[in-house]
Image (tube, rainbow, N blue to C red):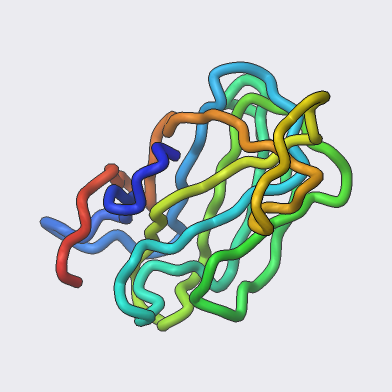
Length: 157
């Protein structure tokens, strides 16, 4: 989202804990074609706190009407790559978690990175992400859980 693994998004936990589902919506700033995205968990020492298990990925051109492009269950606490099968053209991406890896009530992320089709004359990327992709710039549009969530700095949870 911002290239800073020290910054993160986390579902609301004060003054009360929001329950699932938790969503974060990304605004790419313009209609963009992409083929996959990476979810990078917040660095919490391998506890899985906030890492989704059940997920749904939706896209929108206007931020109002949404189309699901991927869903399923993640089985690891590590970085995830979500592919849509076909290229997706949209302005917004919404990732929704319906449960967490560790069974807790929280949602969180350090980064979401969209990958688009390789552009002509694009420099080769390291092994991660796929060499056929280029990163796309994006910014958080909003982030919410059942009620409200906000970007935050890591806290001890």
